[in-house]
Image (cartoon, rainbow, N blue to C red; front, side, top):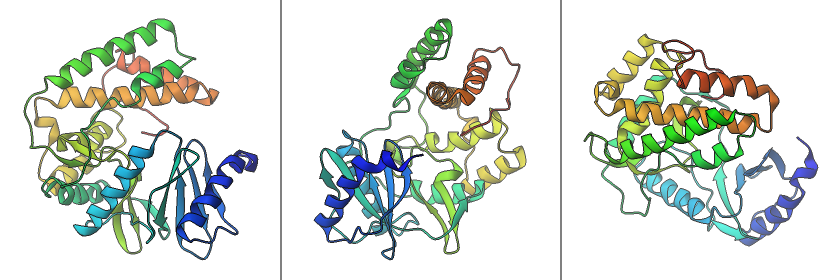
Length: 295
């Protein structure tokens, strides 16, 4: 990471902070990528600068955070300023800084999901869940994979999209987190809370449950004992639902295309991306597979 990468966003940071009355002097970059994260020292405020074109998503995230606070659901909280603001086409949001944290356990995830899914649908605009968000553009960006693998993944994408549209009935639609893995459900000294609200939408609760099920059944990152605890805590085993294979396969596709896109810019991911493709194509034996990297 080089601090020169922050130069364009620092201008956005300064104007956004000025617009809401926050002092930006001494701001520290925490992550400088498509979405940039800055910390305002002494303010306990984190500033997130999203990439251009994400204004609707940022506004939705703000609505979700306010709704979760109103419902007393443990989650990241907004800083007390009017937001989001938009500078040069880039939406900017402001958040209360979290204390030191670690990934939550599968039981932590189950408890918060049970609380979230117990709520009636909120009276805010959320949009409907798209389990295949960015899959197409990830495949387009995956320059290191073989043409036959790319064609096969495109075909799997089309088949799963059709199956998703005709999936069996399950639990009633609710507000879902959309990316419910332990990295987004963190434990602090004050307790467990959910973060990364950008994928919140209306959809089947099973989608949130599938993330942990896939970590148990596909990757082996969760032991069967842990998975049994997850199901007991939440009160439902998504793998017993006849629609599970569709959602699990969609999740596996997302995880594979993530690695394939990442490999285009990071050669250390090339072998991992190919391994995930080989697993999906049945070249690596039965599940659970041994996937590494971000799951």
